[in-house]
Length: 386
Image (cartoon, rainbow, N blue to C red; front, side):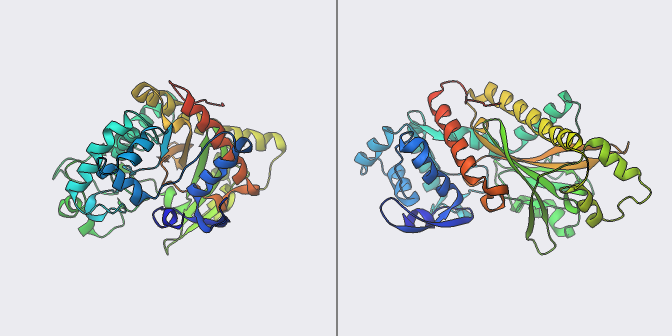
């Protein structure tokens, strides 16, 4: 079991003792899987564990590991594998591939297994997610249909001019590590540098810079089966660390406008955050309306993504679990607009369990187990609670 820990990414969540009495440090997703093992009095799933190195060796050497390969073929689902939505290239990957040829061998051997056994998330869906541009196009379309704002985004072509005051985003990027802000040094905004960061299958995109993401932050919203389980406001400090605040209350669009019109309106980012994050005023009806406005925006975007992903893949894993980062933009007409800044749903996506409000981790785990079990059995699409 300790080998499992060594080969998993993500935050260490807690110390736990397995059914066999082994004390381990448990990452968030391993904790979630352990909780699934106990779901419905332990009758829902029969979970087996395999270290990444062992799994990789079976895939690379199916002939010499025939018994293990046949055992994998008998499984209903395999959770994990290479996360193609981040930087997974062989020369700096976290998966231990020695060469690019070895990685290509892994992919070619894995393909027949994915045709026999379900993977979560499905390999092809994660590959598509890694490109990022299809997701951005989907979000742009959904925003247009719902008459919402979305920052304009264009794909950069080799050696074309890079517009000033834009943010540069790379496909297959990992947790903001491959994002270049307008404030970055000039050498990072040259094609010489951009080309050094990507291979032939990756691209750079230029996106409108929304300064409120830096000054105000954004709301990370966790969704399982069409239900919002928790919302955590996050803001990056100058030292690179994150301030996380579990969210209980919001402002309505009209209230945000009123804040802007006041004589004593906020004059700096700290005052803005004080007004926007967990506001402590308003009667119950106003509080419920503000929460409904935020939730409706998020779930309208989520349903749009599920619909588009269903058309592409038939059975999208995003219907089971995802988080969305929601930003706020004040447009030129002085109107506030929420927008989706980022979407993630792989097994290297942090669940931020220690930031969940009122100890809701168990609810999140049980909800995931319930929806995931339905996803396994449904031949077309996931069971959506909403």
